[in-house]
Length: 375
Image (cartoon, rainbow, N blue to C red):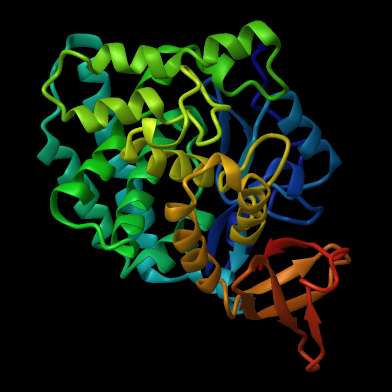
């Protein structure tokens, strides 16, 4: 990539620092969801060069530059006084800010531990990873809040695989609590998520996070990561259930997965959990071609592919995720704004909505309407 000049004052409209007196927080926005007039909250840096400084006002030129530099996601400013919806308020919550800080430091530590193992074979004690989990877990009261925090978390684009596994480990702990798992069973699930994509850490970053669709050869190479990961861990002292989760997390209940096309109970239980967690985190993360999906959009995708997952695990988890959305404000496909009033037990992704003037919309009956984003 050609080096981009940092002298871009002629191309961008900069919000002068001395004119910014309002208190603000930043939130993550996928490049594809940027709107004119938004203000970048942090410098956008590529290869050590600031390509768009904090305070830049978004316009067509900014969006084009971000696209040319393959920037997936940026942060934008929100004024505290304008925070009205549940998700806007979360971004100004002190607990969320503490979670962000601990997540950033935790990600650095996690990456260090895994890289020391990958480069020098230095084993990672189970208790070290579990202590890292506990430290982050102390910043939120439960799984429902964690879902909100993960939705608002700014991803680190340079460490997406590590970020993905760390978030999966956090979600694993919440799922374990919801399913009544404790002690060793909960620890095994959390540790499985810390390790399950370790094979991807051996693959080129450009391959894993290619903006467009992978060609057949590229996809076949990516599909090798469970076997690569298992081979890395095979001779370690890790519990065999963790190793099996690494090998089997892309197996599917109907036999459509890889690497071995296993079905049903032939798939390790920990891997069946990880399959759900991995899929959720992938859909909840922004990509260069789309925003992060809302929890209800994610549930809709699960409902369309129910045969691929262990329904004895998925259905109770999906119910908890859906219930956590009650009271959320959503924007529909026609830009109208509604609140989630009720969840259908047999149609989790199609709730009953209520407008500010008291009108109700039952999405289970009106299947033409779609929720586009959480506000």
